[in-house]
Length: 350
Image (cartoon, rainbow, N blue to C red; front, side, top):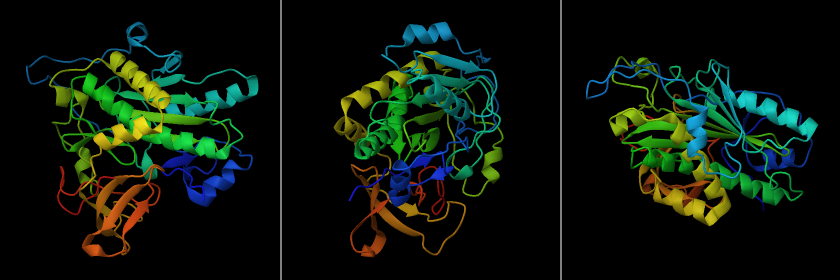
């Protein structure tokens, strides 16, 4: 039986879905309207000097510098920058819908915002970012595979894309000097026990997708932490904190585009290999949440993560041998976290 990709949001429904629901939508015309989208997974924080005492002032994104570093065929070749917008994923969805009417090829177009006012992440959680410090962007994705009459080809392409995006971000973090980035299934990137980036893929159910990415680049989290009062909050970090100095956003974005293009050209075997090499959860105790990490549910359980399957599912084995072998979990149904890393036992990181 054909499995639909987990952890992909269907825009027509405004929520993540998989299995029969997504397969049904893939086979029928969809009416697409903007829903909830991704913002950078940061929290408000001070932007004081680094450890060396050098003050840092954010600068506008430099299109020219970005172009000098870009080494792609299509990704990033068109760049749209907003000083402020509600969501870059909303803008990308509008671009795709307009292109569907005109026939314009907008694949690879990047929509970037210095500040977002209405972005949210998985499960509708609000995420915040100080203006001009981080990377908040979306990529219009309309490849031939998504427009193929073969629904199996479209689903396989979405699975590969969903796994490739956080790997591409992790690669770019390494290039920026913040080495050791790990991928936390399904779509987060962590550094040293804290979250540095979040990714999301929204599919319109027909022929196009939007890739949303938020990376904490130069934000500081060493001041008062308003997120700490949130139930089971995820600890944030930034590339600046990990690298010990401010990080240029332009080559970072160019590296993400280059890595993602290479990974998608390289095929699923390459993506799975790199995902496995950076897998934060494999071999670790995790807690599976059926509702959300903020909600205690009697169905929740602890398990050992055993890696990601070729269909994009997280494979887990219930603690104590219960459950009859390996289970396959999809991101829209559960939330998991590495037990004890950067948090107290029993807390969840989404």
